[in-house]
Length: 331
Length: 110
Length: 109
Picture: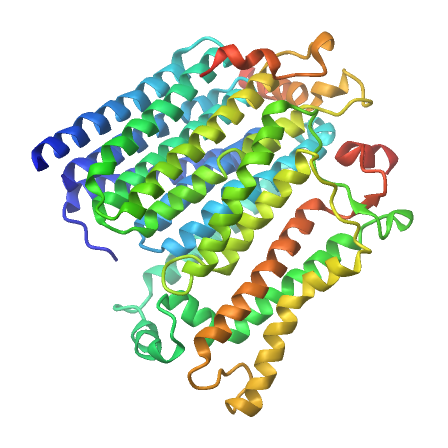
């Protein structure tokens, strides 16, 4: 926890933030209109980013800022637009009283269970932080989060980056047979507007710079490959939405190589560690930092491409002029 | 000198905060979406701009100062685009202008 | 000075949080989006103030990210409201019209 010189005003801010987050969360869950709920959820994501900053978890705040306000909003608003025709039926067909009571009781039980677990934590809470701080110097990175993710718990990170690829395969697998191999077609296609085109032309250069900066800085300061990759993916998606570029066809072999290269390099370096450093995913003495940077760089590209394609959705056809709404008509 | 810089910070940040207050009041009290949009863009550009201006004397590293200015420029770019897009969305669909939905919303903000 | 900057951060955040009333009241989806947008800019300003007040430079990077991606939700929002040509003008406003009708129904109950 960062020490603040003025504890009282900080306390007021934190208390207000907590109340605000709780109130907004209640509103988002209770509101019926999907569009309003999604807009509320985007605002909730913004507040959560500030909450993470107040908890001195700047790495998490960056992820929340990048995912919560950028990609999640896009995904959920797209889903809300798609569900809009069915929404009226949903609102009228409410579940029965007993079912609602049961759901309420189960939710309350989960909340109480979580509260009990939090309250029963031993004081001081068990932590591995001193151990991490002790073992950080051999890895050569200065950001403890990056150190844990890529040196001490590399296997978790490996699985996390691999899991994105099956997720993408899952999205692709819902494509209609004739559309297979074509271009993804789920991105919204607004009518061309000069403002959107300008944004899609001006913003990406800065976004790419900031994305690379986050990855590079991730070694020593908050940031890292995931945040950087999210920013890169967001820039790509912006260009696609504005219609400046078409999404690549999923049969494209170079694209598929790009999707898996990160995981492959990670696994390759990990397997090489068996001979060079006596353990899977161990780095040889003195080479930890350059290897970690190399893995981060390739993983960033793969994660960015995978995230972008996850948002772009399953392949629709080679004529993506209809986009989201065209596919609904045909399906 | 230091006192003068501190004074600049206090004045600029206070003014910026005032613009945020004005933007919120406008958002809550103005009668329709386009006028509320007008209030929002004031807070976006001037409020944040004044806050950044006030913070500049307080950072020692030139890179940190550049970062502050970059945040402001990015926020202005986003704010301008969002203003255009939302103004286009707020207007009832008009078949005559279907080609350029956001063209005439320019005058409602900046 | 630290005290003043922290106070200013709290003030700005509190102010734009008040703007969330517009999120509750609507009436249109664009109005709700405006409230989220103002919260975004206010959040950026509050984070910058907080970052300078506490001397944690990385907080400014969170603000940079928020500013960079601020337009995304609105871009997505506008894309959902504007239907492309060919799906007809009546369905063109379907998401906003249908759901705001629902809300009106709920409000009047």
